[in-house]
Length: 330
Image (cartoon, rainbow, N blue to C red):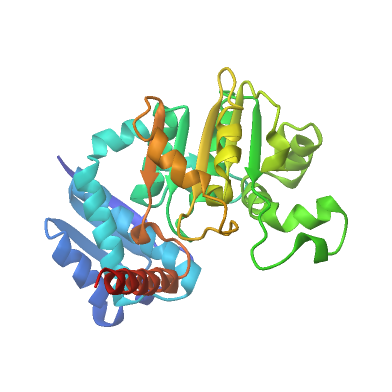
């Protein structure tokens, strides 16, 4: 079916999107040659097969996001966005994506902009959370694991599918000692929990968040405070789970009560536990990967949504690790 879609370029200079002498625009046209792209001022007109037009629209949406985030576009960014869009269309046809994402990748509508699942890995997180009661999201820094998990939990609460959100993190010292930090216990652990507060502040008004926290409709706690509880009708998020011990991981997973869900996020390359302690995330991956009702999502550098250099940093460290492993094998 042939369709026509008009896309308004708002908030960025068109030349940043199209490139000097339309170099970016030409690259997109080469990739999606059966879609006609007409640019006039701040408006793009896309004409062609409905599914392909949607893909091209997604490309431009991601490019606008990158410009707003980084202030520029590089050829590497163009290729990455095209690859993400093309590979996702192969892995997950549009009809299936529509079933898994009721609002075209929008997880929730916030006080500012909608929170979207922007990458294949984030979209898989949303889909797995709908299918399973427990989801493990494992991947490197910058892939939006925590932010996406919080957005999913808030969306479940807004739809009244759960009545409580509990967000937990292990308070593991990474280069600093809690004893030397100023303040009482609450102030000492605040830095560990701050990313969870930041995500919630993006998704809820200050007044609503304050009310939820006061009523303990939303709780943000160190992992150790979860012991002995049974959480019914709740959504549990365990963040930075690579720093949970085996016993802590088992304790957290067994808090799950009736009509409850959990998302466990972590990065197995950033374990801060003492050398004598094993990561509970690694053990859980081994023991639970084939358990029905538990889903695993593995994010990678293609899911990175932070500064464009984060992807290159991950590449550099991965290459270094591979070189060390190769030398050990010799």
